[in-house]
Length: 217
Ligand SMILES: [Zn+2]
Image (cartoon, rainbow, N blue to C red; front, side, top):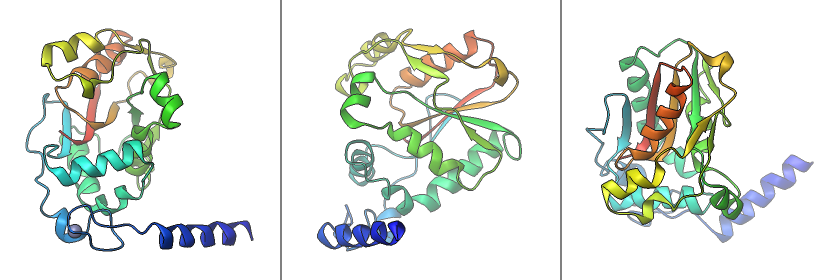
C-alpha cells in the first residue's frame, strides 16, 4: 500500500514537473540520447591515477551536474548511465581493479554544504557505480573534511585552489582496508587539487593503491 502511494506520488510529481532535456527540451529526459552523444568525452585527466567521463566545459553536462548537486535530481544519472558505466569498466580494467574487491569513497563535502543540501552528491554517484558490481563496497566516512574552506568552484586560480584545500582531509577507520584499492569519487575534477589532497591523506595512513573517478573534468 505504502509502495503504491509512493509510486502514485512519483507519477503525480512527474506530471507536474516533467523531465525536460537540458539540450533540446525533449520530454521525459534530463539528457535525451541524441543530446548525450553531443557531449564530448574527456580524453585526459590531471593524473595517471584519475579518470573522468565527460568534458566539463560542455553546457549540457555542466547543467546536469548542477541538477545532481543542487537539485537532488538523481535520475539524471540514469540518462548518462551507458557512458558512465562503460567508462568506469575501462577505468577499472586499466588499473587492474576488475574482478577484485574495491572500495569507493565519495569526496566529502563541507559540513556547511551538507547542512544546506542534506546530501553529498558524490555518495549517489558511488551508489550508482556500485549497483551492478558486487565486488564494490562503499565507505562513506573514511575521509573527513577537517576544514570548512571556501567551495572550490568559487576559486578560479589554480594555485589558490591548491592552497584552499591543503591538508583539509583526514583519513579514519581505514586499518582494516590496508591492501584494498580505494577509488575516490567526485562529481567534477577540475585542477585535481581536491582529489590530490584526499589521496594524500589516505596514503599518509598507509593506503598504497588510491585512484580517482569523476563524471567530468
Ligand atoms: Zn535532447
